Length: 267
Ligand SMILES: Cc1cc2nc3c(=O)[nH]c(=O)nc-3n(C[C@H](O)[C@H](O)[C@H](O)COP(=O)(O)O)c2cc1C
Image 1: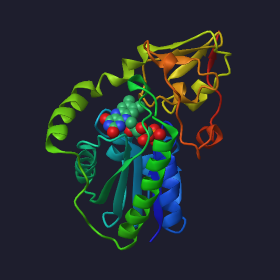
Image 2 (image 1 turned 45 degrees about the vertical axis):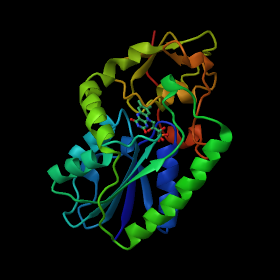
Image 3 (image 1 turned 135 degrees about the vertical axis):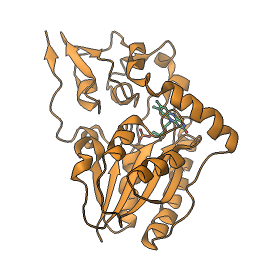
């Protein structure tokens, strides 16, 4: 049976996790959901992994859309890894329900603690702490791979009850507002109009107007634009000029840009 791992990422944590479990499974295919139409997914029984970050205490909208149109053989086996910064809340239960609506079963769902990329609340934390999180994540991925290989079926991991109740409500409240949250982005004088922000945005939400990035209110709040800006010129709200940028150290800009075409230039 073939294994394919579909990932969604802003700053590379999920891509690193997808690659690491692929290696542990002996070389599974790794594919970005941004470059795959869900309707093109396997129609023969296969093992399918979904690896993505927790966004606002739930499944990011891009992954919700991907799963909502997923076609897979009913005997396919699903596993998921939700990378997060310590508050997985109800994310994997939500994913289980989304798959159930497609008559598909999530056999394994794990949370994986990684450094935070939610920069409005601060940077990723000290380097030593990040290294510790990477080591712990690597160990946990080995255990997850054993479960996948043994075709185990376990209850999905979830946060404490209070977290699931309070934060699931907040997730539902903000879900439809995420697109327009990009009105808090701005660029400072360091912007050299390189256009990388537009190319890296998985939602194609940034146009260059006379060379300057302009967010088009179709944002997914992944923060890739801000975190990958080589000049650190992109800001969000008032505090980000003082916060350290983050991306996973083993993931490069080239990994994420892949074959993406350049951004639309408007004059
Ligand atoms: C908009 C946004 C919302 C987030 N919400 C949560 C959250 O609710 N709980 C949590 O633990 N981490 C949250 N995070 C942190 C990310 O899940 C975490 O840093 C993840 O490892 C980033 O993965 P990536 O590098 O693949 O994008 C959030 C990050 C962003 C950008």
